Length: 619
Image 1 (spheres, rainbow, N blue to C red):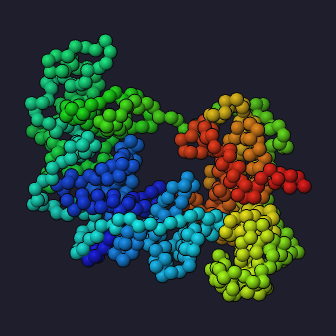
Image 2 (image 1 turned 180 degrees about the horizontal axis):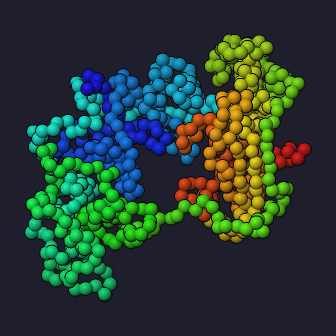
Image 3 (image 1 turned 45 degrees about the vertical axis):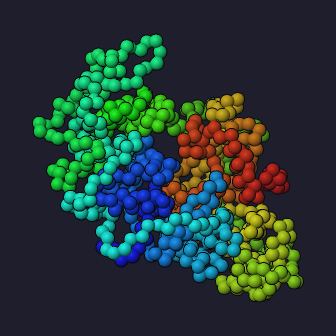
């Protein structure tokens, strides 16, 4: 039993083990189905409330979200929060992702941010809940504590999540009562998607052994061995009889499967109607979709086709559903039925294949890259410049401000007219001194800048925390490794007129140094060697030369927490994107991608690496 008063938020589990909230509108929709009990059928079609979620169905019995076009199953849960927290007030906190759209924080994070916002704190450090970020309410920015990268955040108002009162059972105990429903049965929705869902559930109830009965009256059904179809186009169409039905012996595989199913039904077995789920006293237990094997799903899809054809829903051929395609034939069939019901053309073929690597290349075919010296480069830890104190380093980049403006220092969040609020190890400068960075003009306590420098690489460079302007030569914390680069005689998709530059990164596991997050602790290096690809064009070679500079400055990789696996203390990419798919772009890390070279040049520039950098490295 749960709280007497609470806010209900429905959430799904993503591939990183984080529970992600559905929107308030979707949560209201799911909650309405839950409260309706068994008479609602036990399935929630999310596309009815949000068209972007059209492929998804939630099965309340198994508490899983089912994606119809891929077959992916994800756990869902019904979670409860304090009515005075963010979801109870309709407050949603979001961060801006790389493509400019907004992503809501996990509910726990959003509630923490909102609590600090209501307390009028200038900022909130999320380290205590497992995230290496600081939210600055003055600039409405999210700052990565390790990389100092900043993203915009926003606070917006939405619907209030549904409220519950009294003692309610947990969602896993759905349906609430094991007895028959006392309220009148709900009239089933007649949209094609709901017809499909209910037919699936009826088949599952009966163990997927019997044919499905369409939700139409018996008199409208065609005779046995006859399938009602719209007249095919073209002069080769067979004539129809007076009922508009193509007659003749049915010899297709679907009908054979249906006949085999019908013959396997035990005598006396009653086949349930899609619109009438069995009562709780039924001897046949419910079986979740996840328990059906491939052959059962295939039979189910074929039976669903007959249901929708008989009910007058138009269908079109769906090709190549058999064989070794990664798309499950039954799921592809379901997708085809839904699309055709909406009047969309359907021709599902074998999906594109992931091509990570090029065809085999012999040693004699591998060539050096014109204009680029050598074919490999190693890197080791660069020692910080000795003999200069942090104060001496910063003196090159700062101008003292005798009369500071009456505004905040964005590092310590204290007024510039007051002493610095930094409470860490004490720098040797006075806490009330104020300086202005020479190129960008942003003003800070010198005390705060010295503290920030001491917490970094101490490599003689400084990066403005506001605009990210780099002073000096920025270096990173990439662990030791090797970078190889050469030409191979194959072309990338989108670049048919040139060969390919292949880059191979190799980094072994090791022990973290003093510049890393956990000095003295071991770190892992997953997925090495990593193969990356560039077109051997003028711009591709330019990118390679700048990547070599980034490698020498230890900026390609870092040690941190993987956003893919959630593993900590492991080697991760450091905000310079690479293409790791050779012949496809299924993951977004391949070709063709017309904007990739320009995008990676911009990312390198943000790290302080441009064409001028290559000349600096030679000097």
